[in-house]
Length: 121
Image (cartoon, rainbow, N blue to C red; front, side):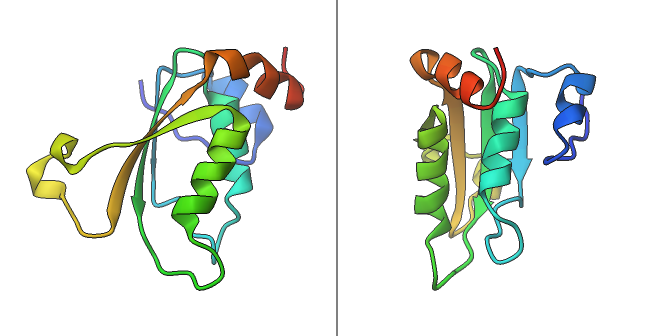
């Protein structure tokens, strides 16, 4: 099933039945409007050891920070593996310049550490 998740609301992930097998994220990385850290925290809330997170990111120029670099570092620091999906894996009708597809998975060795840091067991 598909459910809407209000990221930042720590109670909604358990109500929806997290962790999920697949998490889809689009148009959520906009550093001028939203900090990236709460999104990474939310991804930890809804992900488990068997989860796959797919993120579509449309690059917007930010002169203070490169969101591609910062978001990747935040994800890796949180215990996710971070894979840039090559254009060859994109549907040909949806290949856009400066649009990226990323796949995240929790590293099995880091899953317990990340969960404990966020107060989960």
